[in-house]
Image (cartoon, rainbow, N blue to C red):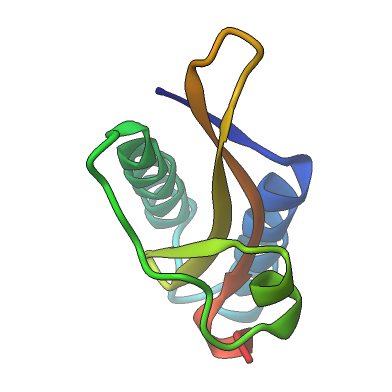
Length: 104
């Protein structure tokens, strides 16, 4: 199963780590940030496993209304849905991401 990420997801990750690098300029290295980003994208690929099941969105009403499920990794919570293409093949679309400190 393929996994697709909305541009909004990439932007949320980049914005968070750009702000973190500015705020923690003396204690957070670019290497650490790049390693965390690599881990995030590798973990998101786990959604391609057809047996991976994650809970329905719990706190964000807009995510609940859209029927999203949530997946957490490296302090981020991702909203996604499993869809089926015109050939009947399932795929995962990750629609949104928010850092856990902002998840309400």
